[in-house]
Structures are given as C-alpha cells and as structure tokens.
Image (cartoon, rainbow, N blue to C red; front, top):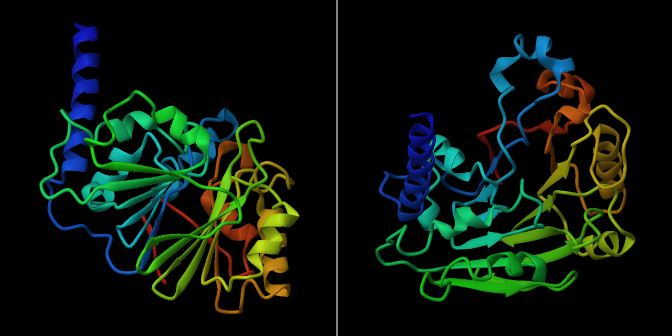
Length: 296
C-alpha cells in the first residue's frame, strides 16, 4: 500500500505540473515589471536545526527560479510546480526559458517535458524558447517531440547579445562555476531596464567584467551560497557580494539607484535569513526570500 501511495503522489505532481503549463488556473499575481526571487535548497544541516525553529517565517526556501514580467524565466528547478502554485505564476505564459547551467537545482528537464503532449494541452500556444549552452540542449534530446511541443532551442555563446523579442535582449557572460560544462550569468535588457542574473558564480572572470562595463544595471542578483563563510570562488558569500557591489559601483556598472540582491542561500552559509540581513546591514543590499517581488 505504501508503494501505491507513493506512485499516486508522483502521478499527482506530474499531472499538476502539466496543468500548470496548461494554465487552467486564474490570473497570475506576478504582474508588471517584477522579479520573483526564490532562495535555494532545504536547510538540512543539524547545526542549524535548533535556530530554525525560531526563524520559520523565511526559513523554508525552495530552489532557484526567477521570473521577469511573467514572460522570461531564469532556470527551471524541480520546485517550479510548487512555486507556480504558490506565486500564481502562469507557466503557459512563459515565452523564454533562460538556463544558466545543468546542475539539478537550476535545470530539471523533466519538468519541461510536462509541457509537451500528451501531458499539457495549451490552447493558442505561442511557443517557448529555451536559451542555454550546448550541454543544456543535450539534456533535452529524446525527452519529447520539441517541435510538436512548440519548444524552440537556441544555443548561446558568452559575450554575444541576442534579440529575444521586440523589447528584450539577452547577453550571456561566463560565470566562475562548473568549468566542466560551463555556466552563464546573464544580462537581460527589457523595456529600458537592465537586470543582471549572477547565479551560480564566484568572482566573475575578467572577460565578463569587461563586457559588463557596457551596461548600467537597475538590478543585480548575486550569489550568496556561502553566507557568512569567506568564499570568492565557484559560489559567492556575503564578502563576495559586497566586493562585487563595490566594483560595480566603482566602474559605473552599477549606480546609486541600482538594487543589489543577495540570494541562492544554503546551509553551507551557516546563517539564517535574519542573520544575513544583519550581515548586510547598512549596505543597502537586499536579502532575498521566496516570493520576493521587485518593481524595476
């Protein structure tokens, strides 16, 4: 009987995700020029367990996905169904899926499979474009008839700017992460506003810094996986977020009105949400949480 219950739950999740792509629900709550931010991962370290009970409001965080205007989605984690239901995100209205790299907390191809027949049925489907490196697209091979599902795949290269739609451009930049396959950070220009998606990465390669000088950012989303632990490589920390902010301001990539957001937290950072807020106190750097919205 336990096996039946487990299978039933799995089928229910798959059916629910297909329905989310199909959009049988009402109007989304994510509207306008906004970014929906999620933290990363279940906090599993026993050393934090006692303090977790006293900080529940922003403790339970899901894997990293970010939506812009309900049209562009950065990364596709296994938690996308939870997030779409909780935040009212209409997955059928996502037109562009931008993938940083193939690590499983950022890219779950089987969630995208639920967009295809015979799972989802999307009336008047305008299609979806997936942007990512060659390794991203290899993971999609054989999972579905993507042409029939109206899923277009575009392989991108670091440093080039790609027109996404009449009001949107996308520029991939090499991240300091996952050298075996490569990882991209992205600059998204949309409707006169510019957003930097800096996950996953430690200190950016100099070629990426050079390319960033061509932009003036309205929002910079930065990796803070290691929290209060000192770290500058592969993933970020409080120290690296502060240092990146300082260099962006010094080189004119950021301005006094740029909003800097720290996210992608984990138990490796050895800090709860309020402790991260304390660590960034006086800097103006925002500490993200699930469901956070920013009007740009």
